[in-house]
Image (cartoon, rainbow, N blue to C red; front, side):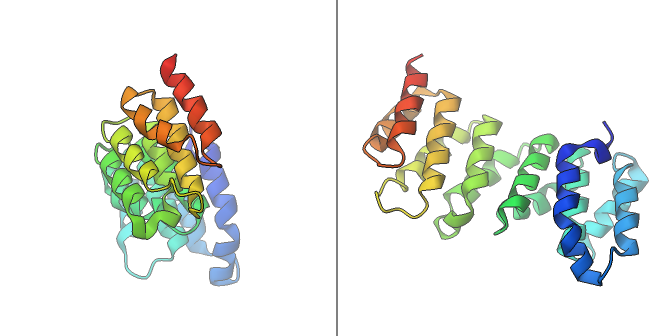
Length: 205
């Protein structure tokens, strides 16, 4: 499938259109050139050009995001660090796009990076997508990291309970019996209890 037919790529371009126009007053020539490059991101010459876009100083965030996504879905490991940074961005839509590209990239470092981001309590407000990515990756790091993060989200008044909910749902999807104690601890939580019961039922099956 051509990248221009990728629904996630199309969604990213639609999302970035206002940002691009605000950056220049109109859709700049650089945007046209960049979108032409991504069609051939798998070729060596085009990949080099996209990598230069990704690393050149002064490039706007929208350009670096398009380049990182395009390199990532083409399997180019040079996109890894930029995609990890975007995975922890304050804009959740950027996180979604980065997570999608990281799954397609298949870099063995991804799970470790996602676990570090999910467990960083200073950035817990941005941990939702790293948590969901861990569940999707089904990597050796996934269950221990989700258990750790869930254990920190069990206060009734925790403002980041949605992160805890994602942990509960992820642990249920992973179906690892090591999660039982953590899920049982979540049962009394007013917002997590129902999902924890459902995840425990999945473990029992």
